[in-house]
Image (cartoon, one colour):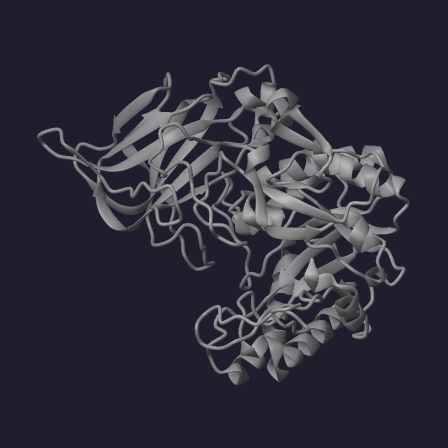
Length: 507
C-alpha cells in the first residue's frame, strides 16, 4: 500500500479535509470482500462456499482483498473490467448462478416476486427464431424468452417507451432442466437484445452439499441465440469466449459462492484497522461500507460487530455501492438491503444505516417498468424498504457529471449546477425523505481519468458541486480521490486521474 505511506498520509492531511468515508471497490468489480483475511468457509473442508470474516479481535487488519466470483454472469464490471460471463464462455463445465438470498426461502415472498433474468446483447439486430439453454442446477421450472423492442434496454431514457416483448412461442411452463432448444417463432423476429426471465426454481443442486443456498436460485451453463433454417441447421449468434471478448451478457444477480483460489491480488484494499487507527480519520466518526449485492448478510454483520467491538466511532453504515450500476432491479436490491439492514439494527440499535450509494445519472434514474408502469428506480426501492419497515437513516449518492474528458471543459463547466439540481429534484420527486441526511459520498469531474480532473477545471467542478449540494440542503459531501496516484492516459487524449494528489511511479 505504497500510496498510503506515512509521507503520503501527511500530504493528504495537509489538504485540511474533515470526516472520512471508506469506499468499497469489490461491489464495483463483482467480487466478495474478505474484509478480514481470517474467517470461515461454509465448506471449510474444501475452502469454498460462502465466506464470513471473523469478528474476533486479534491482530489489526492492515490489508484486504476481493475474491472473484466463479459463477459470474456479467461480462462487464465497473472496476478493472477484466472478468467475463460464465454464460457465454464456451465452457459447459462452468455456470452462472443467481443470488440465493433473492429466493423466496429467504425473502418470504411469492416465487415470482424476484424473477431473475439474463440479457444477451448480440451487438446488432439479428433475425432470430431459436434459443438453446444448457441449464445447470437449480434450473427454472418456468421461464419466458423476450426481445427488446427498441435500441438499448440497459441505458434507459425518460422519453423512450420501448419494452420487453415475449416471443410468440417463448413461454415455457414445464421445464425439466438439461439442454433445451426452444423454437421461439415460426418465422423470425429482428432483435439485438434477448432476455430470459426465470421463475420457480427447481431446488436441485449438482454440488455435494447440504447448504440450502446451493439449491436456491437459477443456474445456466451456456446460452445460444440464433436462427434455425428450413433444414434444421441452427446458427448461433453468440460469441463464446472465456475472456472479456465475448458476446456481452448481463444478469440480475450473482451467487457470492467462491473459492480460496479466487483471490484477486491485482487490487489491494487498505485494512479497516489500518484506516480507522490512522490520522486520516481526524479523530472524527467514519462512514463505513458493507458488501450487499455480491456478499452475504452474515459477512456484513460480522464486519460491523468487529468495528463496534473495536469501539471505533462510526458516522454510519453504507449498504453496498452503486447497485443501479450493477443493473440490479430496485426490488432485488431492496430485498438484499432489507435483510442486511435488519440484521445490523438487531446487532446495534444506535447504528445509522443507509445507502444505496447511487451512481451518477442524468436527470432520471430509471428501471424497466413494474406491473403498475412505475419506472422510477429510487421510488420503487424506497417503497420496498418502507413496506418492510427497514431502517433508512440516510440517503447517499454520487456525482460525476461528464463522461467526455477529451472535450473542451468550458461549456461543460457551465452545466455543473444545473445537472446536479436536476438530479436532486428528481430524487425529491421519487420520494427520498427530506428529513434524513443526504450524503454526497463521491464526486468529481468524471469517472474517467483526464487532464481536466487534475487541473483548474476539476477544482472548479468541485467548488460548484459542493456549493450547489450544500445550498440545496445536502448534509455532507465526500471528495473521491483523497489518496495520491500516478497519472494515466485512460481515454488516449490526455493524462490525468481522479485523485487530488499526484504520486510518482516510485510511490
